Image (tube, rainbow, N blue to C red; front, top):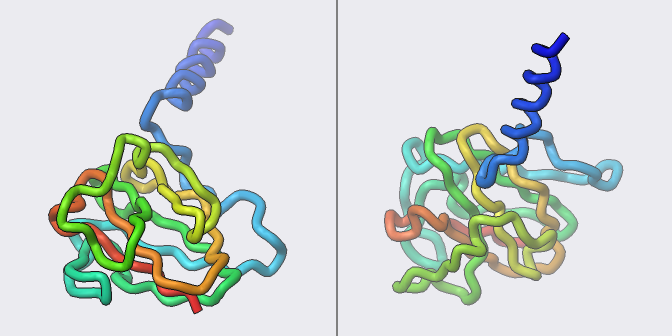
Length: 155
């Protein structure tokens, strides 16, 4: 009788571990019929290249094109933790652009700024609404200089 209680407590403790991400869920409560685009996050397998904002890599595709009203989410298929964190401006900064806040999930719209938060291997971010047309650049807190960065173009 005590073993199931111990197991339940261990599961709860693991779920509350800082830096741990929830298992992939597909996105919470989206409007009925909502379009969702998933961007792969994998520094090892997703090749580098160039976007309108500069040298990029580690995300697939490097330039994601979506319509206003589409939701975007990030899925880490790599064995390392990553983030997808928005960067202000039109080109990738030459200096490191992030604070530790990038490790926490934030933002529900592209135009408002966002971070997937710390995505461990296999984790999927919450969906982020492409709410305003424009180009949104982002990068990884851990691997920005690799260069692990990409863009989302909303039309």
